[in-house]
Image (cartoon, rainbow, N blue to C red; front, side):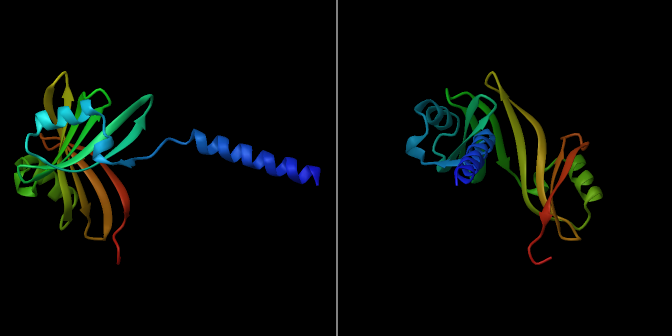
Length: 168
């Protein structure tokens, strides 16, 4: 009996330690619980935007907030530090709005793909916004779901398989 209790306790301790060591995933946060500094930055950069939702996640020692919003008809995901420092903007765009070189690369790499989402990925450093690359979420002709990143120059940055499309 004592061995069973000790064994069970050991399994619980090991399980809790493993669980506690796991990186925290993204968690939904009510907009009224987002820090004031974060909301002030978002509202200043995107005046009159329709706020959709927010989430938080840990990246190393930092807690980051992602605020989802609609601004000038376009969907945006804005990533900020707790103090309100903006670090990343992901803005939805149409395929036709990609630079021609980026369009050619995507067409060449994944002909007949179905584009589910294309975003501009804009890094923000010291208040300066710089377009880094484009991220396309696509379903290939053979029904694979892939996230493809391409630089404005047309150079392929990365392609990561995600899953098989539903019904494939």
